[in-house]
Image 1 (cartoon, one colour):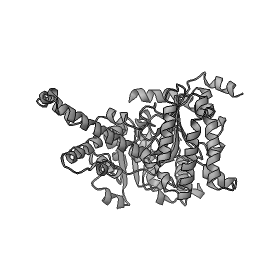
Image 2: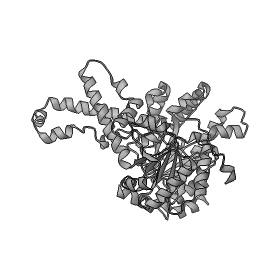
Image 3: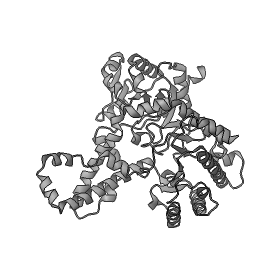
Image 4: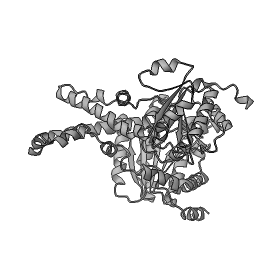
Length: 200
Length: 272
């Protein structure tokens, strides 16, 4: 453990936790995990389970965590700078594909408007930055996690919003029931040692 | 020996679709001090690919997809990009030969990605290969070139919008449209015109089943913008081995892992 003391969390701006929905009911385990993360110094955590069990447990979780706020798009800039608070985001399957369909309709509305004018705007409407903007507009525009820890039987991201996991390191931690602090530290430490080329 | 192993594996469920991120060619070249730097690494990588395709065919895997070239890879040194493009052209043209692995296994080849980003010779060769193998009923082989998931999603949305627009214009001219305008239910549906199924229909990988296993070599744990949409229930496997060194044992391990978790993943699929 001593060698992990010099944990450089600079690279870990955003951490996501994926929990199997059956295990997500173990609210006390989730809270314990968050408390570990808080102790380690992780400031921004996204909690995901397919069915939204964690979303429904939001109040119970926030009650037990002092110094924690919920991620809101609007105050993204303010809160990200606030080092005292841990910021939590709650995400489920509906923030993935369904959100993309909603965002698609925003782009379609723009497309219909442009078709009524004489300019050819297609190339300017259907771009990745516009998609990111549209996802934000429909309420599913959170940041891309640097690291995603999967607590469950299998290493599988279970539908975490596709738009947000392009280069996310995905690590399998085993079941939530048998989670260990040492494994968590080790996973974060290993992450800080990874070097990505981003395709180059 | 291999037949024996495959027979044992076949007692359990064989995955339908295995996806590969072939990472580690350049590291392999460096490790072995290969004289032609990265080029030789990519050549070795191609040999590894032909072995893996052979094993997948023998095991009865119906569909294989490979991340041959990402849109991000265009950012590499121009020399390397050119080399990979030349190698790709050579190999695609090779697919048309009788003795090629594709013909041997009766595989149907699909090139998927933003093909407009590729040069004409490659586009033409790819088209030829797809036509030549269109009637093959063996394994489906998806070669993802100039591909990223985010580009795939945006492209699918654009296609969906174009199609809907055409549909609206056609309906405009018909009597049914004029009657429908008064119909309140139709107007409500108007509000959510693009449906999820429209988008999925237009995804580059739309004709493939979702991958059951995704193998990325070199111990890297990320998807790098590959099939992000399709891997909701996919088992991610990251052996430390470099791609040119991948062997039968890695495939066997991945399939065993898949079989071990199959009932859990099936249950999750049903719950969705």
